[in-house]
Amino acid sequence: MNNFPNISHIIYDLDGLLLDTESIHAEVNQELTSRYGKIFDKHIKCQITGRKSIDSARKIVELLELPVTPENYLQQRNNLTYQRFPNAKPMPGAVRLTQHLYQHKIPQAVATSSSHEPFNLKTKNHQEWFQLFDYIVRGDDPSIKQGKPAPDIFLIAAERLNVSPEKCLVFEDSLAGMEAALAAGMSVVIVPDPDMDKKEFDSAHQILNSLTEFEPHLWKLPPFLSKK
Image (cartoon, rainbow, N blue to C red; front, side):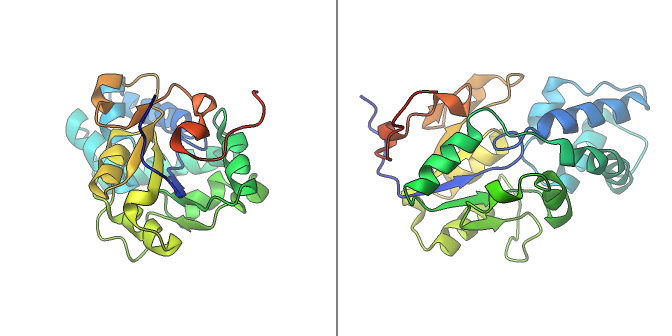
C-alpha cells in the first residue's frame, strides 16, 4: 500500500501536463534549429522542458551554438508557436481529473512558466475548463523572482491558496518542474514526456505514463466512482 502524504490542495503545470503544447514547441524548435543546420533532439528537449521561454531559448542557443542571440531565437519561435497555440488539445485524463476534484471541492491551481500572452492563446478554446481553477500563476507574475527549477512559482501558488506547501500535490511533466516542486516542500506526481528517461525522475513521489492512471484514493482524495 502506498503511504502518500495527506493532500488537500492540487497544483498543476500547464504545458505537456494539462495541454499538449510540448508537441508544438518540439515541432517549432526542430524547424528553427534545422535552418542553422542543427538538430533539436530529445537530449536538448529534456534540458529545456518546463523552463521560462527566455531560459529555454538561452539553453538551445548555448547547447547548439546557434549564430543568433537568445532574444532573436525566442522572437522567431514565438512567431511560429503563437500561431499554433490555440490548437492545443487537453492531455489524456486532464479534464476528467480536474473536473472530478472540482466537483469534490478540492482547491486547484495552475502554476505555469507561460506568460500572459501565450497562456491566453493556449487556453483560448478552453475557457470553461480553466474556470475550474481557483488560481492561475503565470511565469511573468511580478512575485516570481526565479523561474523553475527554483520553487518560487509553487510557493506563490500555495500562498494564494492559503495552504502550507506540505499539503500540496504538484502534477508536473518536466525535470525543472519536479525540482521546483520538491524544493518548495511539496509532493510531486510526474507524467513525463515519452522521450524522457524516467530514471531522471526517481525523486518524484509517483511516476505515471498518463493522468488517466492517477488514482485519487491512493492520496486520500475522493475516488473516481467509475472507470473510464
